[in-house]
Image (cartoon, rainbow, N blue to C red; front, top):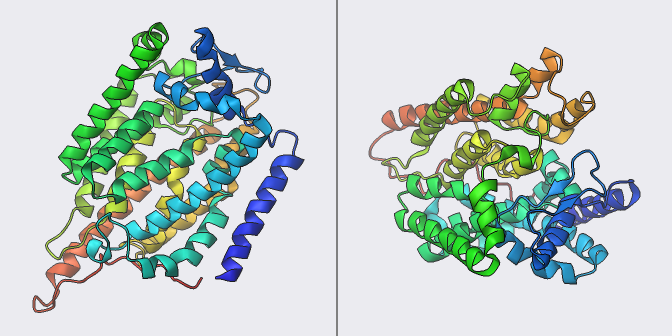
Length: 425
């Protein structure tokens, strides 16, 4: 346990040193947008604000819902240097919590308390494992860039994980509704609730989100109306769709086509294909008669689908790769060759940072044309998600075949077939 803590501490120290030593390590451009943009609402200029001090090629506007500005507003009272360091440390702490909850979700529901959390003894035994994964997770591309920019993504993932883990419908739905009010992407979690037949949570999350919209309109008036009336859905305002930093389905197709495909036939066809695979993957993870259950797998099906169909999914949005790696290594499919191969490929892609490597051949984030090999390599995350869906489908079929040949006199297993994390890494 001590060496695990030492490894995590070393990883954090090296990361902070890197941030302070490198020229742009503490620019934290997105944190500047949160702080300065939310303060601009006091002058009635929330959606006219841009931050360009460190991003002259693309002045960054405040692209979040108006409710987010109300949440971020108190941050401008904190000295930015203090806030920046605290934000980095809190992000790492949130990542550790994400890993811990993912490890809990990857085992069966048979050994959990009323909140859906695993038994305390097992929690303690997993602490070392979680520390090691957190130490490594800091250096994955989504977390690296989240730390570089001072992004909010790890906190959003943690909020969703807490919502999924909890058995209290009002807490689960309320959390997702509030998170969607801050940033729209967590709203896709409503599909998870429906897939798990947690209808109250799905409905309540929509109600709470609507409440954030109402509060925004009441407090901010025309500023909120501007967002919901004309800015919502404007992908161009968020950034260049064709940039290799955008790892969504639309971004990948646009780079291959040499132009923004928009929401045209090519994108629609690709979405249908991905939806069919996602549905098949979910069906393969549905609870079976033997009592098996895979909450983390189902959550990943939904969240990865959300990343694919979103017009823009920057590399720092892909923090879900960390729970994905945990599912591939410890989940029900862990012993299959496909899961092992896909896990190794995802680890290599995210630790190397393939989009970052490809960005060196991109003179500008606005460049559309590029050599065909680079365009296809830029679809690496999309291909990786489809590979995960295939692994889930094949593993589900294998599991059903094995169940059909199992002696019926044998009682149902206590666990989901997942490989339990080694408590002493």
